[in-house]
Image (cartoon, rainbow, N blue to C red; front, side):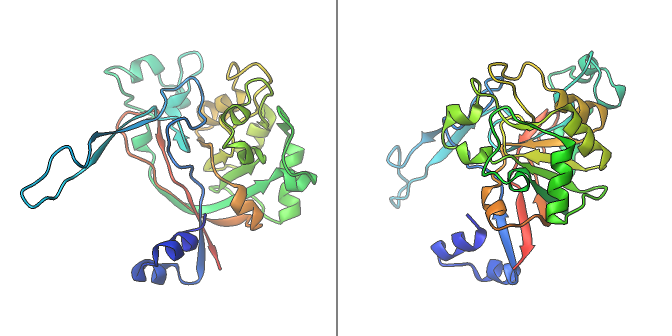
Length: 280
């Protein structure tokens, strides 16, 4: 749903209307809700009301409700910090992963050390480039596929860009088991595709799938070579479980991305709500 649609439903907002004049804004984040698809490796999202209307009243009859949430930092649309992955106990840059996590939080590579972003982003619509609606389960997106998407769209990736990869798998998001794809596998880049992204000197990379990269049928998250290449070897943060279908349907392939995550001190990731801003 675009921001304009939300404004129309709510009657609009004069200040926001003025700011948005001449642009379209696409919300690339997923709503946070109990039972949403997620990796089984992370604590699930939970939301409850510890204080409800009717529990108590003020003298004038007013009551208040409030919320409590608990969740892992890698559920819903979220961004991985560099500290999320280590290889042989070494983080990006060679730091000792065990030493960095002393005290229950990371003193290097944590998500609070990543600044907010406003910059150019490119959506590489791989299914459109291959002439299909969505990629097959466990399909590995190759460098040739990525080159084909760039050529079809006329959107070269420049150093410092954000690269977002659409597999079409996001259309399955409302079917939890299908989206997680444990038995079928999930399409995405493999090691070679990750090396392609790194060679473009991308600032960040994201995808519409649960783990960014290709997952083999029945293997789950047993091997994640793209995480190793991008997070550990090249210091490129990853955004997962993005909502890219509306953007692709509008054939928007180049835009300004606004991305602000929660600055959770010492954390390995954070929920995020990316916004794509394009000229109307």
